Amino acid sequence: MYLGLDLGTSGIKAMLVDETFAPVGVAHAALTVSRPHAGWSEQAPADWIAGAEAAIATLLRDHPQEMARLQAIGLSGHMHGAVLLDAADQVLRPCILWNDGRSGRQCAELTGRADFHGIAGNLVMAGFTAPKLLWVAQNEPEVFERTAKVLLPKDYLRLWLTGEHVAEMSDAAGTLWLDVGKRDWSDALLTATGLTRAHMPALVEGSDVSGHLRAELADRWGIARVPVAGGGGDNAATACGMGVMTPGTGFLSLGTSGVLFAATEAYAPNTADAVHTFCHAVPQTWHQMGVILSATDSMTWLSEITGKTVPGLAALVTEVKEPSPVTFLPYLSGERTPLNDPDATGAFLGLRRATGLADLAQAAMEGVAMAFADCVHALRKAGTSIEAAYAVGGGARSQAWLRIMASATGLTLLEPEDGDFGAAFGAAKLAASCATGDTSERIFAKPAVRAEIRPDAGLAQAYAKKYEMYHTAWPCLRDLTAPAS
Image (tube, rainbow, N blue to C red):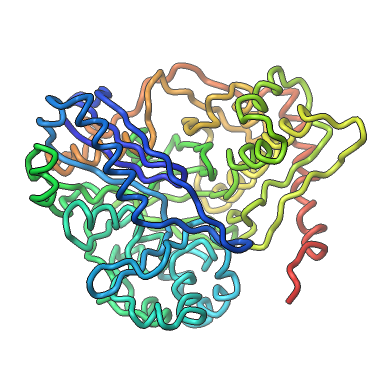
């Protein structure tokens, strides 16, 4: 038995699988996000521990015999968050999350201090961890001075589970402090942020053992002191669950944020279009990603302001025969690929008196699809060919959205057979890898495909025209919506 824990933005998920990776049990605990100021996004790490405790308690209650045979635990979680600990491992402030845009002004300053583009392989963006620490240094100096360790969100769960300060390569690559080619911390990049290696956790590969379950937790749960795998950032872990470990077919994740993921055999950075270049969760493998910050979150936002549930909104979009008359820019939390603009804002264009909620819902889906089309173009400019992708995430349950997505991006989308192939599943596979030492396709197999959604020729032609408008809209609106200096 293997347990995967996935720390998501809106909740934590615990997934127990057997030796054949058949699901045995799944448990969830909800989490909330605090937004104390415009552009801010925070969570209390104590809530993650409470959520993990609750999810594991559910599995212990419902599957006691299976949990007693647990062999390893794997971890996954949302990337780029900054958990600041003092010398006694006490949390100094709420975690600044991946979709927090407060450190936009620190990005240019950091860029000028060191070769982040060449060493870290990525643009300095407000979502990443390093500029968050510079913001803390400049705005909360007393907190910065007391900071003894900086952990990523899932690695705070690891500290609770094992007592060890450890990170793994895929998540560490998203801090902007890792030499992504060498898979080691960069002294130059740490110095540029006012930090040293002493502030950093130890590094392991995602398939390695990072520590063992603390005796107190093992005794309380009635399980052995099993190893805890390095694990992976949420996207790398999802790739492990989908078997996306080598170049070729990638995956497209329609979650709170959106990701187009492709594995690569070498470190190949390209920052011109804000493509993310990170380590994968297994040794000597890397990956590239196009990332958008508001995917299903665009529908969640529309739900919140209209009072209609997200499933209710999705039900308004069934047979899509032509584009919505409305164009939506999904930049509700700024944007990464290809804009690299934390101050980018969303917009509806083309509103008329006759515009209805169905038009807005379809426009929201199309806007997210257009953002993914941007990612496809950016990856291809980076030298990564991608023609097909597994479709995962909550938004992939909408057949209409997948049809829109395929037609707008030109990708053939692959629907896996029934099953949960998300980050928790990938974390469980990394747990198996750490327990067995096996990183082959026996562990990281690709799922069987239930259906293929190919681009619709008519819709694709119509969306190509709409994409031209979408692509030119933000530069026209940017000066009108820029924050006052």
